[in-house]
Length: 189
Image: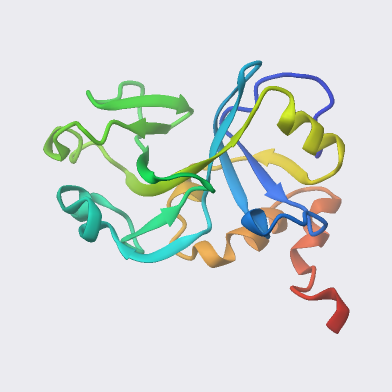
């Protein structure tokens, strides 16, 4: 399903920016939705690494962060706040981790890292997040700004986040796979 027409939870799914999306904050963005309900939507952009190392702002979590060990810009909202997203396989997660969808969950960054370290499959730190008010995302979906696709646990910890937009589109079993070859600047085509 590439577009949503009814209000149903998209928590745990990915929003993949269409080539037509004009907002520079979301150009070729891949957004993991962490919460979606009738009160709004919250997610993090998975493919916007910054030059800032995790050790520079959250030294105690640096050893647990996956490669590249940098902070990611999760979106344009609250850039001064940090969110931890981790993949923890299995049924039970440790104290300080809340399951969002499947093996993906949020890390309470106030928890001592040693309480989670052994359980973490991967950890990514995000500065800020992407947020939509009630009905706002649904309107953007109606306008064709986003493709909605299933997430995979490896999306959170992609070692080559700059390739994630194309990789997510390429794995689709529909016409969406063709958009993976869409040129960065269609006017040069």
